[in-house]
Amino acid sequence: MPSKNIKKNVKKNVKKNTRKNHTALVQGAEPTIDRMKHEIAQEFSVKLGPNTTSRANGSVGGEITKRLVAIAKQQLNGKSK
Image (cartoon, rainbow, N blue to C red):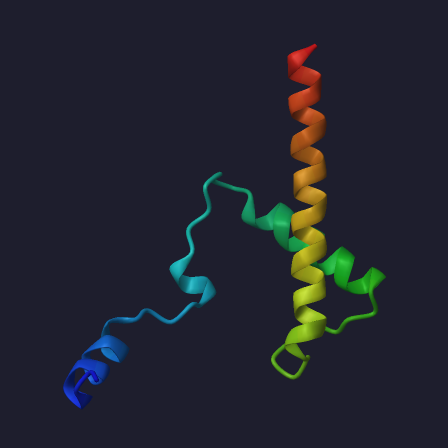
């Protein structure tokens, strides 16, 4: 069984998963992604913010991912022809 000191050290070394720790792979993509986020939130009638449930916020994030994957597939299909 791990000692209490090891557990404390592990907790100290784990980074919090916040947006501040994420860096964009494509420079300048943030405004476009942010616009997409707000458009999807409006479509889903989700008011973004700290008082919104993680389920509602997650549905917006999931839809962003779906749409980005669809865009990438279209671009890849266009390049392969």
